[in-house]
Length: 308
Image: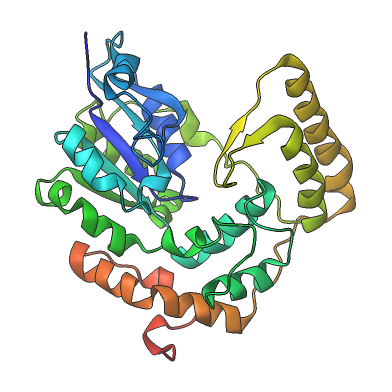
C-alpha cells in the first residue's frame, strides 16, 4: 500500500508507561508500530524530514492499523498543529501519570542520560521548580513542562472534540492492566479479546543510586552522540560499542548493584510543595475538562490546600 499514513499516535506522557502500551499494541496481530520513539513532528526534525519518506515506513504493512509513539509530543507546543495538518484522521493516545511522581522519575532518567548533572534530586528539583537555571543543561525546564498535561492537551482540542483522543491514567494501568489494554484495543478498533504476553512483564528497574548513575554516565560519551545544543542524543552504531555497553551494564548489575542500595533520595516537603503548586491548577483543569478523578494525585499533600 503506497503512502499509507499512520492510524494512531501515542503522544504522551513521558515516564508514564507508554512503552508498555507500545508493546501491547505491537503484539496484536492486527497492529503494527514503528520501533522506538519517532520525533518527526518536533523541531528540528520536522523541518529536515520528508513526510512522504516517513509514510513509506508503513507502505509494506498489511496490518489493519499502523502507528508510532513519541511521549515528548505532550509537552512540545509546535507538535499538535503539525500532527493535525498531516494526520487529521489519526487517533491519539495520551497516558498520564501523577505529575509529581513523573517529575521525580524524569529527574533520575535525565541524570542517567546526561541531560541533568549528577546531583541530589531534591536539590535539583528544588532549583528547577524555583525557576533557577541549571547551567549547561537546556532540557532541565522540560521536567516542569512535560507534567502540564491540561496545558498541552488543550492544543489537541480538535482531536478531543472529534472523539479521537483517548486519555489513559497510569494508576489504572497499575491496578488492572488487562482492562486498560482491552479499552485501548477497542478504541483502536481491533480485537479486544487478544491477550498480549507483555501484560505479565515487569517494568525495567530504575537506577536511583547516584554513585551507580555517575558510573553509567561514563559510557554516554562512548556509546552516544549528542547534538551541539546537548538536547538530543543518538546511539552510535558498531559491534565494539555494543560490547562496551554490555560491559558497563554487567559491571553495574553484578558489582555496583550489590555495593550500593538502589533507594530513592528523600524529597523534602519544601520541594514537594513547590512541585505541587506548579501543577495544582493544571490538575484541577484536567479534572474539570475531561471528567477525570485524580484524587490519588493529591495524596502527596493536599493540593487543594497548598499555599500559593
